[in-house]
Amino acid sequence: MLFYSFKKYLKEKFPAHRVYKISLDAGFSCPHRTPSTRVGGCIYCENRSFSPYTRLEKRPPLEEQIQKSMEFYRKRYKADKFIIYFQAYTNTLAPIEHLRPLYDSALVHPDIVGLAIGTRPDCVPDSVLDLISEYAKKYLVWLEYGLQSAHDKTLDFINRGHKYSDYESAIKRTKERKNISIATHLILGLPGEGKREMIESVEKVIALGIDGIKLHHLYIARNTRLAELYEQNLITLLTLSEYIQLVCDIIEMLPPEMVVIRVTGELSGEYLIAPKWGVNKNQAIQMIEKELSSRASYQGKNYS
Image 1 (spheres, one colour):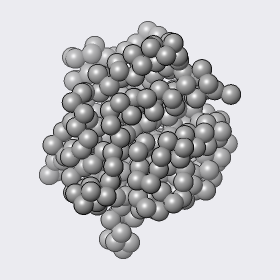
Image 2: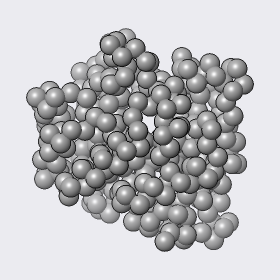
Image 3: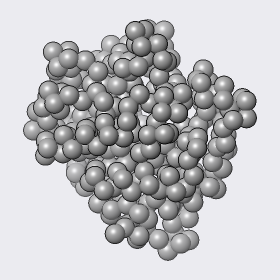
Image 4: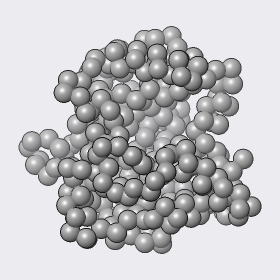
């Protein structure tokens, strides 16, 4: 096994089933996208570049989003079980009186076996963590934290709106609820970061004992502050070759049991400005596997 993919993980968890993740837009926003703060969110963020429901003039009800996705995955991949993924924006940004009925409504179908929730480390009060922990008594539960970088200087530059210490606190408090699996998102190639800084971010999240990781390359989406900086030639992006090498270096560092949920960001679409590498996600994954094979390497080779 070259690396422990989410697909392999699900096969181990549910050997008798084909399990697929259904991404939802539940109508959330982010804490610093609200009118009162007026700071506009992260400089790279354009949810429409990766979350299809945010592109629609009117967001379909959750029931419709779930039903259509189930039909698609059943027909195309012969899926028979599903994980509900609250993906768009910050999906814990509400009081539990709102969150509980929302999560409940998305979990009513008998073929749903899991719940994944995308959020930020500054938006998980203990009451929300207690609520999420309740679902883990019946479902496979993943809480996905967008960190992007472990360096406060970078977090400030990209207007992330939280510090690394917020992430450390969130991980510590989440781990106190023993039944929640924790994933972290990191962006490789952020402005001002070289390989050393990126590797340090990976080392820090490994040290905190998380369960899964999502690696994304920095890409430029339309309608973002980052796009403006790119047009002014102030942003340098990783090449495909550089990214493949870097991801393989990181995979070699990871604990063998850590789930590698994602290894690349968006590679196509109307909102993508750059980089346009000319490959799709499957081809990028194949290139990563080929590079690991050529190194006679694998996940955890350099883990200590």
